[in-house]
Amino acid sequence: MLRDGDMSWKDFLSHAAGRSSSYSPVYQSVDALTNILFSSGTTGEPKAIPWTQLSPIRCASDTWAHLDVRPCDIGCWPTNLGWVMGPIIIYSCFLTGATLALYHGSPLGRDFCKFVQDAGVTVLGSVPSLVKSWKAGNCAEGLDWTKIRVLGTTGEASDIDDNLWLTSRASYKPIVECCGGTELASSYIQGSLLRPQAFGAFSGASMSTGFVILDEQGTPYPDDIPCSGEVGLFPLYFGATDRLLNADHDKVYFDGMPIYKGRQLRRHGDIIQRTVGGYYIVQGRADDTMNLGGIKTSSVEIERVCNRADECLLETAAVSIKPSGGGPEHLAILAVLKDRSAQYDVNLLKRKFQTAIQKNLNPLFKVSYVKVVAEFPRTASNKLLRRVLRDQLAQELSNRSKL
Image (cartoon, rainbow, N blue to C red):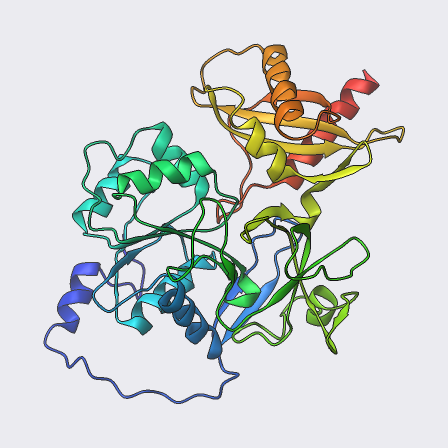
């Protein structure tokens, strides 16, 4: 039933029929707000982030420059208005003159994949967990995705095998990796059609932005050597917010960050790796790093290895648990199976995880606990909530020890 003030879609379209498509602009100051978004809350309380008139311009500039969005394109990116990709895809399509394809319902199954075909989508965005679901369900089988000319992905770390499957559905069109933040109104690191690409990796900084990778003492690594550490963003960032509505902006993003070339770096919280070939890999949030036997590693690194340990696995999550009595952190791995109703020997799975980690990551890392679950807790934007898993697991193990 319609509420007071609501209008049906049919009435809305007929109401606009015959009207002029020319409208006079309404001029506002550069600081005037266009919308308010909330951060995902993966690391704590969601932050209320206001976007100004600069934010839409930044959105459209990034997609134009990095994904080559054109007026003739039909863009589609499964999202909602509560996640940063909602406003980004709206502003990006309308400011570049592209058409926005809207789908109502869950994007997890074949119906959405068929919609991509029927709508003639040319620029398709995705989230790695969505691609994993499409691949597991063989949702694109028999569908024609040849109109797609560029693919985008964001939200979490990509799986190389899943990316290969995705591009194969679209005649091996390029996949542009994007990583940014709600407070940036864009990506700070991206792929680009003008630079070499590698699955699951980024080509470099987004247009007009810059960053350094910091060591554990907060000192920037030289730009030309392979390394891994927390990213520090250059503070002059077109479109980024300069205020929060429910927190201290400077305290959240600048306090404690080092000075680089006379300016204080901006905090973002990602751990990134620069590879020998000059590509970049996002290894997760700084909050998701763990210390295993005196060696720091990220959850994403472990998950990449464990996801390939057995064909029955849909996805894994790695967290560290601090023993109640103190001592080194323990590695725990939670797993979701492709067949949710299947029974699986947890001890066998633990051995497979241990073998995969020792062979492909570090022989000193020991898997202490494995648990199979039906699904993982996620934010509205589909990001994995490792801190929730960590808290739940810690509580469960604490209860066991009491018993």
